[in-house]
Length: 72
Image (cartoon, rainbow, N blue to C red; front, side, top):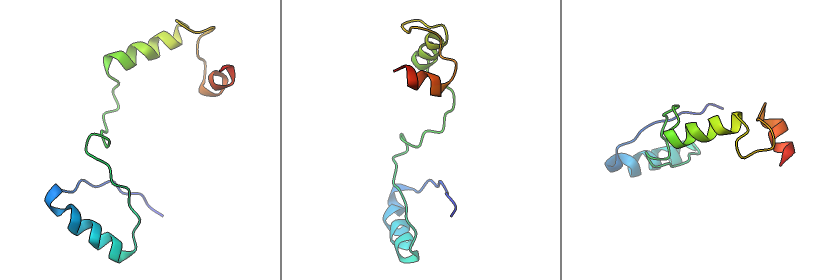
């Protein structure tokens, strides 16, 4: 199984969906906003991550996800 991410113009969306259906391909529709591939966090997210690493608002700094989840 392979996962592909493609951008389809709105006016061709119905045609592409019909073609995929006829080919037996399963797909998930996402708006262009949901498919944002920007790996750089915005300022609020960056500050929140920084605060978590500094243990601001937490009992101790986050070392890794597993230990953080266990602490919840």
